[in-house]
Length: 180
Image (cartoon, rainbow, N blue to C red; front, side):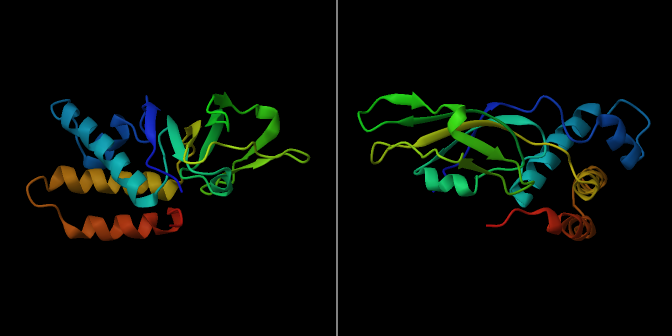
């Protein structure tokens, strides 16, 4: 079982830029830059939760109960693995040697498997395994456009958001959701 992930390094860049948003929203001045920047972050956060995927590159600490959980990681897409830590049977925290496992970066459904001839170590019952890894990556065009639609709808209907934008966004994102 995977537990909620914790960001150890937050995104430093967003999947859509302020210039792209200004073009989408037909904004010519800098007066609303702060608002648009907040909407960019809100759109990314919403789309990440909707798709159960990370679109902005970020480092996360993810915890699970068993190495069997590595057959399907809690987050995706996977960029790289920083470390895998566990508590051994003696109660000592250990870092798994990267030579034991391989990261399988299968788009939205990444996994980690042990290499041939290797096996997972024994862990202390009741302890958690911590995977620290970089997630995020290439944003599909439909997801990118959905963020722009979200921002445009939120910007132009700040007091009473239009429902049409949500329908278009759902249609753009539905094929980019990770399975439950």
